[in-house]
Length: 101
Image (cartoon, rainbow, N blue to C red; front, side, top):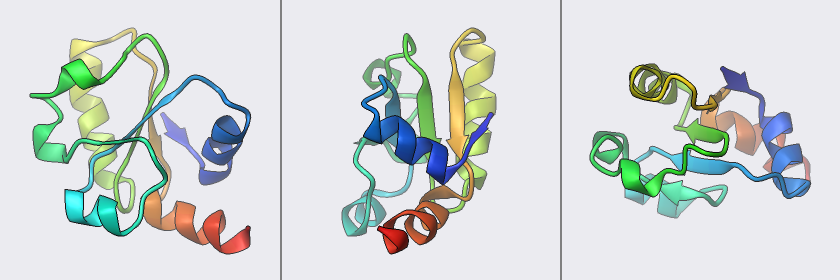
């Protein structure tokens, strides 16, 4: 399920209980991030203990494509989890939200 940059911004602003997982490489996360936890894509499946599936989990990557693929994998293991991908990824979030603040 997709979540738009605006919807994510509103969730964060309103203090909603969600977990943001940035699956980009560490150097990309360090260059620019929206907060959350950085677990690079190749490390997600071996670090599931860092993800709290009791709450909605929003995965983000640069453009939204890799986060869709990890959600498809996780849905098989956690069918009742609420998993989202950030539509357009961090790049679109930066353009729509950060550049307009």
